[in-house]
Amino acid sequence: MNKKFYKKAGHLSGFLLIGILALNVHAQDSSAGASSSSTSTNTNSSSGFNSGSSTNNAVPIDQGKFSQPRFKLSASLNEGYDDNTQTSKTNRIESGFTDLQANGFADLGNSRTLFTIGVTAGVNMYYSRPGNKFDKLASLTLNLAHKVNEKFTLTLNSYFTYQVEPDYTYQVELNRINGQYFYTGDSISGAYEWTRRFQTVTSYNFVGIVYQDQVSRGNDYYSNTFSNDLRFQLLPTTTIVASYQLSLTNYLYQTGNNTVTNAFFAGFDHSFSPKFTVTLRAGGQMQTQRDTSGAATSPYGEITLNYLYRRSSNVQGFLHYGFAYSNLALGQSDKALRLGITFNHSFTPKLSANLAFFYEHDDFSSANASSAYTEDTFNINTGVRYAVTPKFTLQLSYIRTSLLSDQAALEYDRDVVSIGGTYTF
Image 1 (tube, rainbow, N blue to C red):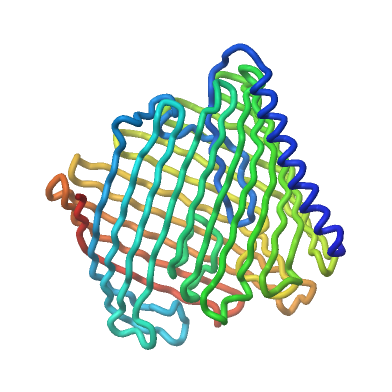
Image 2: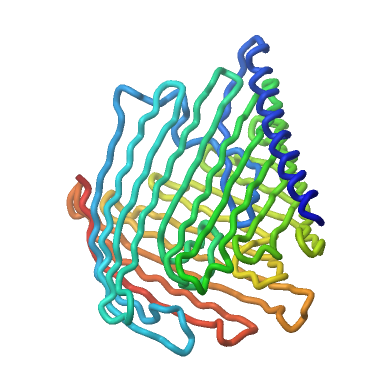
């Protein structure tokens, strides 16, 4: 596929998105009558694709209270031990560490707008690690949903972080420590209810990651994704969905891996009860490399669930299969299977615990068979929290990570344990 076609695809998809959003806005201006409203939230994934699902916000827009904004500020201090600070198989370096973080949260919603802001800043100091002993952390989260009228809702979600540790919930970075990196995942969508049962959601997603260390910069990339979802409420508890997505992925240093990916899939959102919801998507992806014109196809599937089985206690899970975009050598592609499940349980108003398990299987294929290999990553993390007072909480956590691979030099295992406290102002 030549460069001219690649550029035309980007321009065409941009015009398509703008046209559909304009059509939605025009329709909401010209339509009459009232219908029930729905807020849609899109989630970025590693492939630049989202499931196309619509998830109701925890706080409905019409329940926001601008007159009583909620603010929260907390600080935490943890002491811990890491038995493999470099995530290395042969050069294992153990160290104790001190982790200091500050967190801020603001809820500024009103009767028509849901608006929340979250900020985190911190530093992790390793006592025995050679070279740079400090890992820095900074993140910003913005969530905005505005009900333009009873039929049209505009949603903006943005997340930015600067950190070192892999984050298995976002599924976008390398599964080992490779220095500090910047990551951002941003989406804007417009949801319009044409009838009480039929809704369209038009979205634009941007995902980008940049590593600070030179050795990891081959994995720097950004992806622009344009999508349109058709949603029909088949039953009061079930909505069927059909989606199309176009993703343009660009690598900053390995331009031979630049791709155009088309995806078609369908599925449903179902509520077994107000406390138990499930989404399912299934379809296919076709990926074309820009410079080599090489093409590959992959099935696409995603399942998510959320079950609130008691007050302050829930289970969340996801299963995803499709193209991924991290840890690629020149000319490679990656089909990844990812599984995650998280339990949050409240034993008493003061005592709570969490347990999370993540698994990822990566199949790195290439025209050169000698460079093809697989990886399996297992991550378990658990923690216990006890509220000594309404403002002061003690916490204990343990994290175990293991990576297995056809290339033995890439394998490692790691254990991290920490104990500390959090004070909420």
